[in-house]
Length: 121
Image (cartoon, rainbow, N blue to C red; front, top):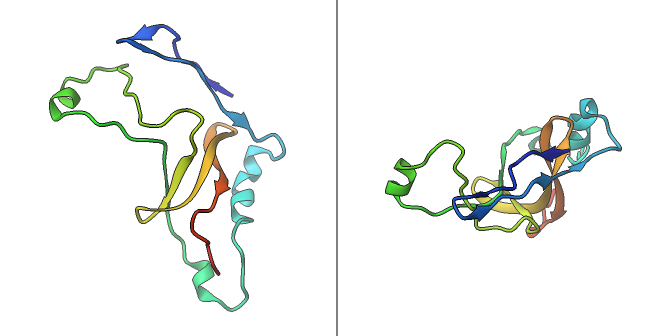
């Protein structure tokens, strides 16, 4: 899957197309099951059924309020990360893992590549 983006310079920034890895080994309908399989189930531990929300941070951009107020549609904001750098996976604002963006059917996904803090059960 690729995201079609103009390769024309835009405001002095050269924009390149981004190619995401497609997860071929599982149909998109089974993607939720693949995520559920990541959970380590310990019989009798009620904490394993508690649901939480993860946030994936692709990068940040720093600009003044004036620049933000002057932003236009189709304007590109350059983030502080390169395409090769992993994205952060956050829980309550704290990095718990890192990974790479992938395509899961028509949705974004993230493949976990690093666990900087051990996720203990």
